[in-house]
Length: 266
Image (cartoon, rainbow, N blue to C red):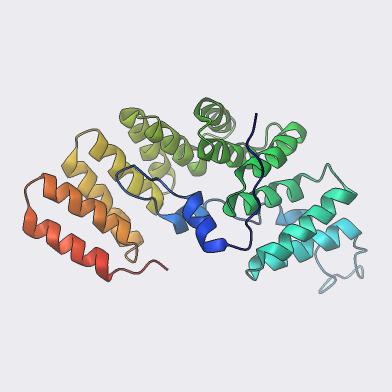
């Protein structure tokens, strides 16, 4: 039985902290990077273009298309509550609208309402079972609910359908790392990096997994790369400081802690 729903779209800062929290683990993930790989506009191509430059005249826009366009605009302008209302209105008119279900699920997930997000993703995947973006999104939400076997099933299916999906390999790496399987996590994260070399989250978690596997030099190298990509994230330097402490390099560790204090997440 799923837990009771909790809608907290208005409390964005607490929600984002919960969404990407790794309490009890070596360090927190890089939240902005994780957001970057779950855009709120994957179905933007489904809406009609406006009539600017259209030689055939204006395109008649349906009510669902209009609502979808306005929902995307609201999300893009930092108004998630408005976007949620519009996506819900779309689903009242058209319960089978996959794009609305996907984008609503992402907003709810970002607000910490993982249970309802999963319900919408279940409905969307039922409609489009081979959609890789939906499978990756559902795998990520299932992982946040600690439904690791189900999350792994979704992500491995996504990889079978699209082996070049960096997001699928990245999220599978997170699932394996959270399951305490660092060697398998390392393999998946390295595949994500091979596809997308400048994926800061993959470098960060590769550092986590290598550290968990006992490869401190490899972990520091991965964190160095993550720091080049996201130099304002203090968590990278905090973890590097802890690793250097364990290596009995107190001066280097102190320098990393100082960088962590000076960093300001954007």
